[in-house]
Amino acid sequence: MPMMSLDPPAQDRDLALSSNAWPFQEARALLEKRLKGKLPDKGYVLFETGYGPSGLPHIGTFGEVVRTTMVRNAFKVLAPDMPTKLFCFSDDMDGLRKVPDNIPNKDLVKAHLGKPLTQVPDPFGTHDSFGAHNNARLQAFLDSFGFDYEFQSATDWYTSGRFDTALLRVLECYDKVKDVVLPTLGEERRATYSPFLPVCPETGIVLQVPVIHTDAKAGTIVYKREDGQEVETIVTGGAVKLQWKADWGTRWFALGVDYEMSGKDLIDSVKLSSRICSILGATSPQNLTYELFLDAQGQKISKSKGNGLSVEDWLKYGNAESLALFMYQKPKAAKRLHFDVIPRAIDEYLTFVEKFPGQDEKTQLANPAWHIHGGRPPEEKAHLSYSILLNLVSVCHSEDPAVLWHYISRYAPGATPENAPMLGVLVERAIAYYKDFVLPEKTYRSATEAEIAAMAELRTKLAELPDSFSAEEAQNMVYEVGKGHENLGDLKAWFQVLYQVLLGQDQGPRMGTFIALYGVKETLALLDRAIAGEDLSK
Image (cartoon, rainbow, N blue to C red):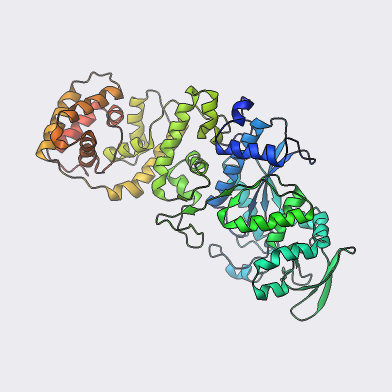
């Protein structure tokens, strides 16, 4: 799928600098406020997203990576000479706290609770560890959307020694780091808190135990186990890991992260981790706080509750580009994420792509299609709205894509699933959406005498259309008939009559386009059945 190109075309930098599109605003703040217009000493600008691999990738994972990539693409336009990287960082050295519900061989995993995820056996039997399995799933997930990123493993950073300098720096600043975290903890937790979590050399479990002595020069700590035994350990080489808030700030310090966004629920954690990063001697990343998703009832979406959409749900009924559009729009506003938002998102996406070639450069930079496709939206002439496709499925009473393509090829001669791949995907998705959500809600009604008279006049006029006619001509004809039957109400009421009687719903497509797609002969037959009082649900 040609999404998220990281080779955006050369653009007028002044236009990009003045663009109000939020990815350009974020990129501009990163360039001017954090970087002061200069390339970091490490030689590249680092964008990061984090991932907790105790579960599978979800829609929030997609949202964070796609939005970060949009900012990265915008930054490439503002600073084309500055190399950039995106790290997708997996916290796979975290101790597994509970057995997930959606895995096989639960007893196998249960026997290893508390160990780093990369030391827990893979219940699926396909990888060296549970962490490796979920990391592979994450990478396959990201690769399927064409994201450009570098995968990073916490286990690798800790055990390879690449975190050693940062860990020793935390040890030097031990009391200051600890004092930042303590006020956020309950009384009982404060009594035993330490930024360092030793990994037990005997059991491999990540221990939450009190640290009773630190030695910055030696690079060691002494902790007290539950059995009362005092144990000395180095803090380097994977012998310990950091508590997650200290870990986040230390990671920013160690990697030199320049940009990372996070959800509203992590605002306090961002502040705390930023203070830790500052104590260690670095500047925290430029941050965007995005709002969380809501379900159909306006409640916060929770993975444990299962009250939201998954990426798989969305892709069953829509394309990935429309999901990217949903993520692009108003990231700082809470939005309902439910099945009924999919058709609108698809049609809005199609409209943005269709308008793009005819827009000037300034308008293109503000077009979401630029950000979804890294400045290179696809060009496909055979555009039909998703709502039109849904209604075509309805009147055809068929779930066979070939039947729909029979009508589509007449409306757009030469269009095939091969040369119009975007439309090909949407045809199949529309069939699925219609079957699961539209069909169960359909309620046809019979027309009144006044409505029958109006439809009879419409039938007469449509029969006079020439073999070659435009959707606009058909639309104007429907308008004229409606204007002549004021007893039905305004034009909106007239169109609702057609939707309710012919399609069994309160809302519907632009009728001129529908007639051009479905065909005059077929539309006349549909009107004849309605006028005769037949049951159009069959």
